[in-house]
Length: 360
Ligand code: G4F
Image (cartoon, rainbow, N blue to C red; front, top):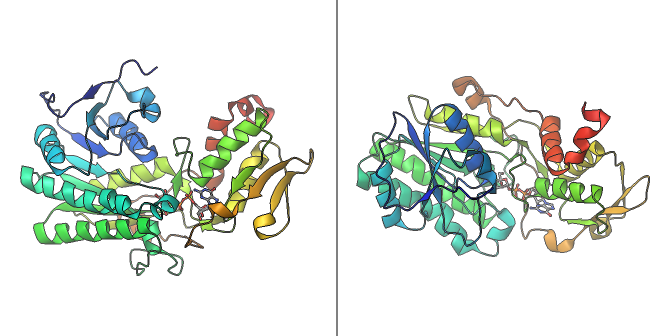
């Protein structure tokens, strides 16, 4: 499946460019791959920046590998970015490259800031150096993690209060984008996206961790799934809706900052219950705190256990977004419900359920 990977070095980009082109940093991730498909459908020429990896990291791109142009590149290297922009001269740049795991950012805060915070400065400066700062439009993947524990619902007007190295790095980038917009008149927008999920979600995030484990239970897994804080509440939407919103931001005459969110919030426990019930498991929760477990009501098998090691040094208790601005100005709204998102993920990780009558 991976045999025809069209990967170019920055020195071999001598092609004729079509009328609209986009460069996506972080193209191998959930959002990058989702956005790439969306842009291809709209007729874009899509360049994807791909950091060096000793293992194949293109599994999310399998269906579009022949249609995109992957370029070896990294937001931690300014000269490399400058040469890539010089050769591709994209009309739109989507900066999705990031160290995205909030928990991991506590154990590698410097690396997180180098990629997430300094990375955006390098890209914005490279745009200026190459002289595309007035012609190209720029999207920055900002995050609801910047709100920390600010009172919900959080909107563009809510004061930021990040409580993780990840949140701090994203806030730095957010302000840099605003600063470059104001100082140099760049068309640079921040999409402040609340949690968004889907079958391409990395296995280290809680939703995918749950749906993957569910698939394994259906294939005979015996050991319980360890999880951290079950009470944390998130505003979960589908990545497809959110990438559509990111594209809409760059189609506006004026650059601006927008929250994308569903406005509904659910706990990690509710997500687990919703996913497992799709496979016919009714979980019964027993015990308290770090001794809590969830058993299947019929077989009595312990399927989830709380693991203290998975709790974070600081936690956001609740995220719930107010996306009124995006809804009124962009005309954006989420089209995929929470239930449909969970089902999409569960069916991707447990395809045997497709044959069950429930999904007919
Ligand atoms: O799935 P998560 O790791 O996502 P988190 O931390 O909310 O961050 C995601 O959304 C942000 C937008 O607000 C993005 F900026 C960020 O890049 C990322 O995409 O954790 C969700 C919740 C947390 O409260 C976490 O403590 O689930 C809790 N949780 C409980 N057990 C767990 C686990 N999280 C993970 N990753 N793994 C667990 O076992």
